[in-house]
Length: 91
Image (cartoon, rainbow, N blue to C red; front, side):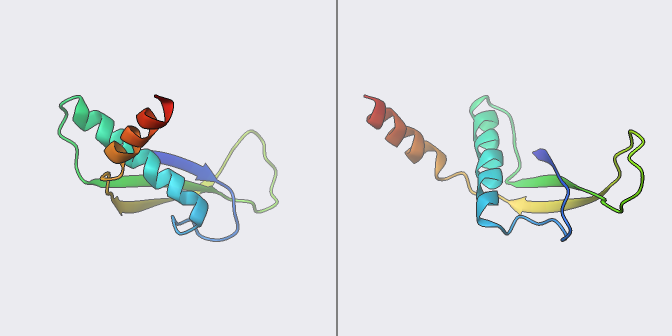
């Protein structure tokens, strides 16, 4: 599984911020869905994270970025219990 993310920030990109837990849950859910369709899916996922370069130069319809590959060993054990909780809540 590969997920592409893009941003433009001063610091180097990573997946350490609390709000980026959503990125991790998103890829875990995608992996769980694909497995449910009978596809063989690795426990490892990759984030291709592009960080836009803000150097003050002219834009000229060109976006430049530094791209970083971030390995993520996922854990989708939360998906099914969460879906059961959602179904229970909606019932």
